[in-house]
Image 1 (tube, rainbow, N blue to C red):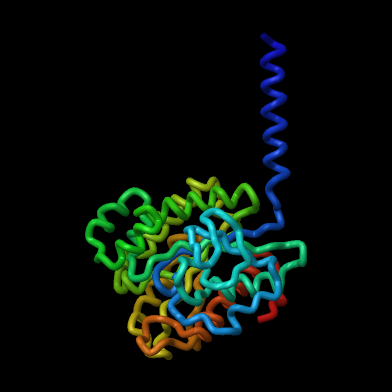
Image 2: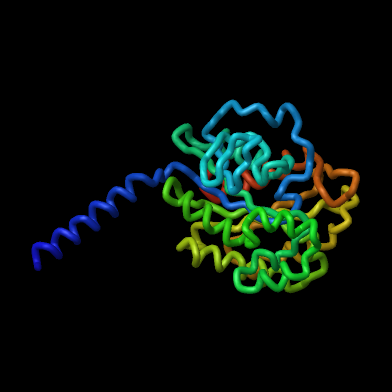
Length: 283
């Protein structure tokens, strides 16, 4: 009996060792969530399709036959990085800027789950169903691509990614649909805390980086929300705000245009690189 127990313990140790060695500590993974500006609203231009360094990867959260992508597999991060037919997103130039500044041994992976037009309540693990029940039909179609629960899909993909690499940060761009909601910071904290718990992450090591809405200098229709967003670090100590001033906008004054996304994405990367200890960042 003792011999059998010893063999079981040895087998468990071997399996644990195997799992440790399969995880690449130099594969930095970032979770991206939010609404349409994180989903990607701008048209993907030719310059955005050029991928010179395949150290930047995207984990497909859906099956996209036209793109040759299968859910749960990694691919070179050529846009779209969210769903099968979405546009350019801040995550594109976040990742490109990261690999341009990180050591050659480091890879960067993106997992992007975002829904255009949604409130932060959609990512509330415990109460999302009540929000979905009131969502418009056009949004329901997008939500259903994630089996009705975008938060659960994000966690599912993140757990899969943790077998290959290490989650280093969370990127958020959301707030247009919560404009004026003074409880937004606490709602975001609820999402963040659940991610920390469900993925067994240390909040001191995994920052939340949140971008501002289209700035008032671009005539942003939701620019007033930036004042509320600025208070997020009071609620989540390890959070940082990315300014949108000077990031050019689309004609609707709600979304950024392609150049605006490029600039915003680089700013996300600059903040994350600084957190990781890199001071001289090439933008």
